[in-house]
Image (cartoon, rainbow, N blue to C red; front, side, top):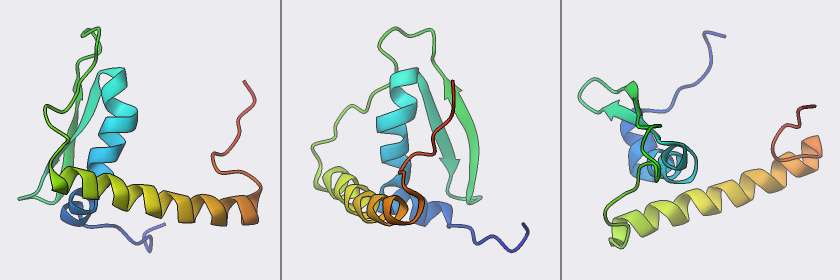
Length: 96
């Protein structure tokens, strides 16, 4: 597993993966990934699960925020198609 390619945290953030992972998944649960760009690492996960509305961004109307959302949307659409063709699913099913 040591040969697994890793994405640079700055690229992860600049492309929009951090924003969209937080906005779409973590924030509604009251959680948030935190990165340290000076060390190029994910440093922790904020825990605000006791906050009824969860976490939210103050302003997503900036062009950079919209572009990040569009970047991830387009990338996800391409990946979804590929996964569906190759695996028959997008999100791996689990029997629960």
